[in-house]
Length: 154
Ligand SMILES: Nc1nc2c(c(=O)[nH]1)N=C([C@H](O)[C@H](O)COP(=O)(O)OP(=O)(O)OP(=O)(O)O)CN2
Ligand SMILES: [Zn+2]
Image (cartoon, rainbow, N blue to C red):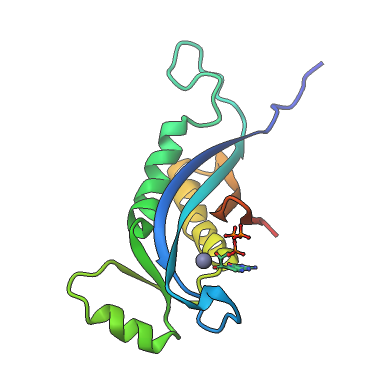
């Protein structure tokens, strides 16, 4: 009997620190504050059948996930202030600080929007790097140990 190759999902977790605020929040989150975010990146594909090769039995080396996610998300967002472009007063203030690490977001930096942004950035990165051999199937972003958002393909 011939069986189709299994699809297996693997997940790599990375962490970074960033500041943000939700300008129109009716509670504490309208104040400037920060989080130790954790991002979990899940890729799905077939395991490599490459006896004797470094990646034999892997969907993808965890090191490759770390390298690409660090380059495209962790390094740009770590120790940055993630600010909504509509948050005009704060944008002006951050721009007045010489060499401040500010990341301008298209939308308010809720954990949902940040997870969605990360997913949109990483999807083509993994698609191009691995020629469609695997897909980015999910991004989970933790804002606190108790609060997170999941993004998957719709
Ligand atoms: N749906 C969302 N709700 C909230 C978001 C968000 O991004 N999406 N963000 C916040 C705050 O920014 C904050 O990060 C979360 O605050 P809080 O609810 O206080 O989370 P804690 O884990 O610190 O909760 P404790 O009860 O203090 O343990 C708010 N809401
Ligand atoms: Zn917050």
